[in-house]
Image (cartoon, rainbow, N blue to C red; front, side):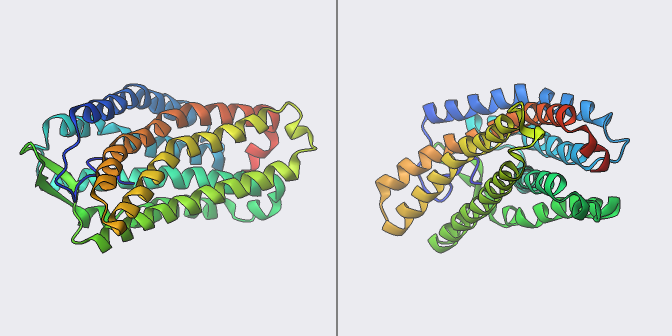
Amino acid sequence: MQQLNSSNSSLITPSLTESHIASSVLAVCFILGVPGNIAVMVRLAGWLKGGSFTPRLMLSLAISDLLTLLFLPVWIWSVLHGWFFGLFLCKLLSYLLYFSLYCSTLCVMLMSVQRYMQVLHPQKWNKLGSKGKKILLSGMWMFSGVLSSYALVQRSLSLDGQEHLQCRLHYHNDVERVATLIWEIMVFVVLFFTLIYFYFQLYRGVNKSAFFSSNIMTKLVTRIVACFFIFWVPNQISNTLLITAVLLENDNLLKSAEAGSNITGAMTFINSCVNPFLYAFSARALRQYNPGTETTS
């Protein structure tokens, strides 16, 4: 999740064009995503009275996505003009950014597990009870906090090539940088293939039932997987190129990979804009075509 100012261990400064592209993408994400997530949160608030787990999980997704997008104006200003907010806010906002991104991806993964268990193994799912589901949800938030803790250590202030102060990731050596990138790629791979596995098992298990008779669920599953793939894979490709460049000590490849990671990192925020609309539609479709499950979830 090398999202912003990723060329931190290099003396290369992103070009003006790259900065403008990244900041433009972030601005669009903020303008569309913040009101979108707030609207979904208001919508979901009316569904929480029945104690259903699905709306609570989607509310967690909307909150984490909102938290991801809420401080984007600060990062946009930093990309264009430098960091003027001190070391404390640098570490705090970086931690909140990583925390919300991890929580968002874990929400997406947990949705696939929950939908699989709820539809194909409802008795086992109901054994969790309301207390168990609350623990599961709380555990997801706490685990996100643990996963993002390295941002507090690695983020620091440094000058870029234009003598602008920047809040950047700082690695003590190439080993630390490669290890961090490998860790982030591994987390993505585990989350993505977990998502694929449970949705595939769900599709295979109920494909012949009335639940799939209108093809709505099939299309929805495809959209969920496709969005997660489209907006996150480019960033993981950039991370892979960065690892290759560092290991090969190839300066030209390193410069290209660092330049690209600024744009691909900004793309991941688009997923936080798409999620509220995607999962709002998801809840409506699932209520319409499988209303009984929501009352017991």
